[in-house]
Length: 421
Image 1 (spheres, rainbow, N blue to C red):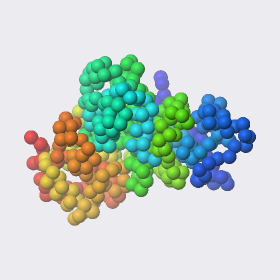
Image 2 (spheres, rainbow, N blue to C red):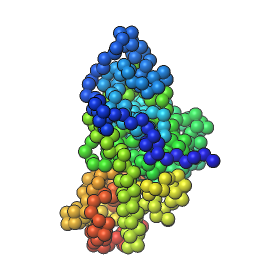
Image 3 (spheres, rainbow, N blue to C red):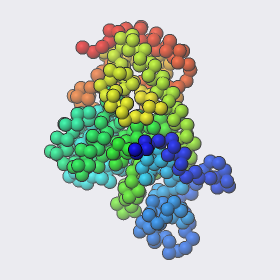
Image 4 (cartoon, rainbow, N blue to C red):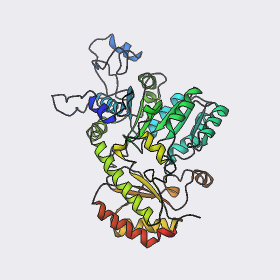
């Protein structure tokens, strides 16, 4: 029997770097350029030999760093931890999640190539694929309901794309893709399968279900404090190395460089991620169940009547729950705004703000915020209604205290009467 992948055990087994003077934390390497001990080594590095991901280095970083935009020891250490978390050979930390997505797509696709992607995505990702890539790069995207694998395969057969792109939980509708089935379809047609795992770190491990590339916006749950912008690409050693090529690698040439100080901060937070995800999920599950009892139109994959509840349960690591995000449809924008204003301005329950994964609750009306890059017809096709509120549940205060506040707002706007027609 194959042993089930354990991201916590994998991270604990990863190499732990000591600080420069023996400190328990890795040092911050602030240098922008690096010394070689032998002159002949420099041209070798420029030709892609002896770098951090080279087959002959085996983790020995002596003299293999070149320039901070190419690689940095502190950033490399964070990438190693994230690769261990996802169970991939390598990881590269970037300055943003969009930087990670953009570089991955531009590396895998050329002018005239196609992408097949979920029709429900983070607005920035959607705009990149629908507007910028075709206009500037000649790369077209076909958007499909990602939970309908028959449609996905039909579009792959028709469009013959280079990339299939999905999110582990669609933003903001929380649909769950069948990762193993999508991976099987993609690989049978020689398509690279990219999965954005921002919503469900540790909960889902896409590479273990066949994803070739796993993307993160580290800004969200991995950071947990809404104070840094950061991203990551986790994939095979060969793919990451080719993305760093000095002549054609977008990670090198487009400059999505993570500051080593940011990498150091995130390195210190990754180890607590499991505990934080458990609490985010515990509270989201509790609130979703109680709101449902009030008659609210709640979507959360942890609810048994969620369409892909069973699928997610079969794929997830149940120690970390079903995630820290649920949605509630208030029927219209006016009622949604009233609901959020009560929670923020009267109860200090959370903040009306975009993003997610913060230790305080963040709430936004997706159609007019994080999904506003999508045209109205695209929002309708994706199932994003005007009154849909996305809630990223925080971990401050007590559950009873926060539920009392949430219940009051819900009853005052009449959630039992908000189910869309």
